[in-house]
Image (tube, rainbow, N blue to C red; front, top):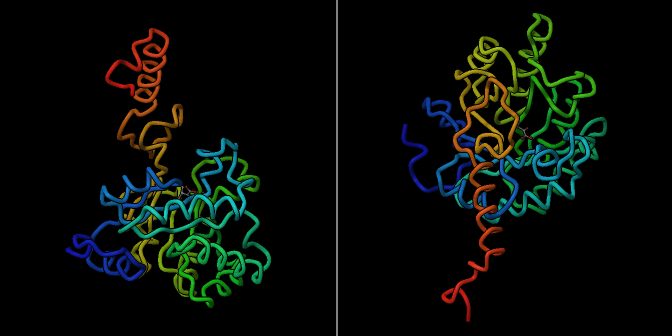
Length: 271
Ligand code: KIV
């Protein structure tokens, strides 16, 4: 259980070792340099530059509008900060579906222009050719099954996935396919915990859960959600570790009063 203790860059091999040794993988999303520095120094194993940046950084309702260029900007900022954590970058909607050549072109751009260690893509057998093309370029892929937010218009909502046997069976088959193709890990989002256990037990590569119970080999959360910045978002699977919304609002409101009352800056805070 010692693979995570030394100060060595986390790699796909570390992920494999952690699964084998039973050490859970802790992953969070992050999109900027300053926060990534804090997250990295707090001992996170992997940082996901998620396309959830579309929601939490840019205020879009879905993840669909974010572009490859925007993901590269966020990811390069995070990579400059991450000394130990592995950085995984989401390929955005439209950058890998349907055209394997475009998929590898976009994945290569992300790797070249950010310095990240891996990309993440949503889906299974329907995008098998894109998986193959990206993997053949030597780019590690983290898969993503279950609730895949880029398919929100197909699903019609963000509810629990794979409740029914047919969808659960397909998910299990897709997970096995991703491992066979060479993905180094698979995110399982918002699926029943017993299905996540079945998938986790069937794979030799680690599963990373979000709303998928504690049997997964690791966990991921959106940073703004777990820090309590994203007020009003309180799904059952989320644990909030801070109430930064209240804290930040309090600090800003104190600053506003200090400026207005001429308390700031005082004599010691001027030249
Ligand atoms: O974009 C994202 O933040 C994600 C996680 C929720 C897994 O894909």
